[in-house]
Length: 101
Image (spheres, rainbow, N blue to C red):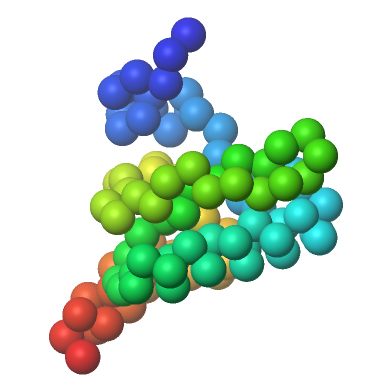
């Protein structure tokens, strides 16, 4: 089974996004801090998604910085924001307002 186009963009039931991930709070904090440092290191602005791996011994490794992550209502980026209390409409509004500043 593959995470193909239909799974990614057409069928929200085909993929499971768990936000936040089922990890100890200490590990989640290290993931967040690592992602922030990576974003700052590349002089990031606006939107992006920092993808990471967590090794069996808890080491956090940056996989990539996705400068244009999926942005459909079923994509991981909006779902991650939704988990923090920011809905899809508010996310779009916030990003547009940020560009207009």
